[in-house]
Amino acid sequence: MATHRPIEYSQASAEVRAVYDDMLATRKTDYINNFWKVLANDPANLKRTWESLKQIMGPGALDPLIKELIYIAVSVTSQCPYCIASHTASARAKGMTDEMFHELMAVVGMANETNRLVAGYQVEIDERFKAG
Image 1: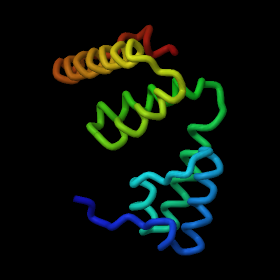
Image 2: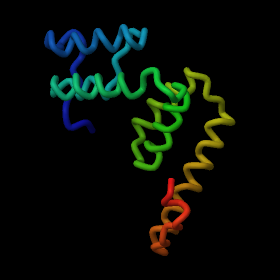
Image 3: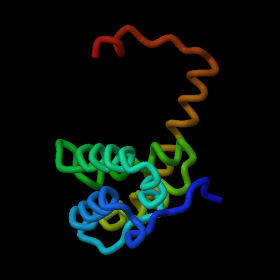
Image 4: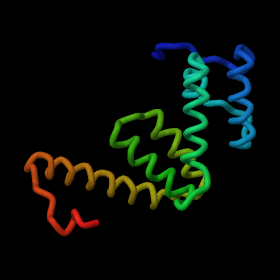
């Protein structure tokens, strides 16, 4: 159960509507998802988070699909079901196949396993890894 109610477009303040309008135009959609609707309870945080996400997930050195795959990997590791669902849908829209998803999950599982082993054994970092 959400701790705050979602703010629908029709109920939003002008400040929130401005962010919603930017989302709709940027994403070329007619849908604002529940994450943003709940975040709209704090308009300043809504705007800051949207601006940061737009900048980070926008054009850059990494392909948009790669960015979504990274987001899924972090979301799985952080155990955020909402983010897993949201970014899996976005990755699929950007071309992720079932085979890519399965391989991604294998990599995430392996990384989490070996990370825990390294942490448990407190393995020292090899000097050659420190160089760069």
